[in-house]
Length: 210
Image 1 (cartoon, rainbow, N blue to C red):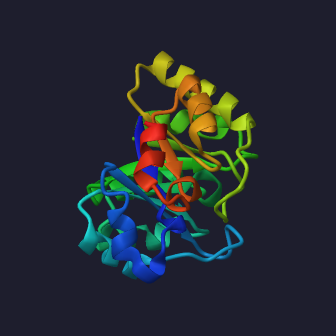
Image 2: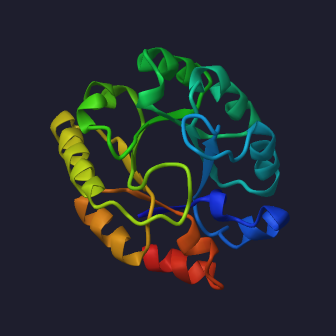
């Protein structure tokens, strides 16, 4: 299981030390919110560039923004290794996927809790990962929505049918109990924010998810 601590829950007043607390993980998850697609505002490319100075971890950047086509390249230039955008925000996802491929980053697509798997089925052969939101995107610390498990299982079956090695990422309400349910359903990556960063022993929480 790949654990991706969400920097949304990190201490931005002391980000270097906060990131150091989770340095044992291969990935860091970076939530980008524009206050339009989701009801919150988080960070931009400048902050991603700052994070890049402090870590060699994979920066898995999740664009929860209305116009990913306009801004995605800036996040790649800032140091993002993987870019995930929401299928709900683009009319021609293949066009954006192709643009990102030319920038030499891994590409992912995300679906909100009320979006069916059918919205991304035809896109599976073109991307590296699918991010299933298990809470309404916008804020950390929310309760896990169990309908996400059915979506994870459906995507897991689809990739088996396609003989595809696509990665399934789950984000929202992840802890030791919900993490087990996601693993059983077929998840490969668990994004966890408050569960990890709000603990005095972040490494213990990471180990519990592993």
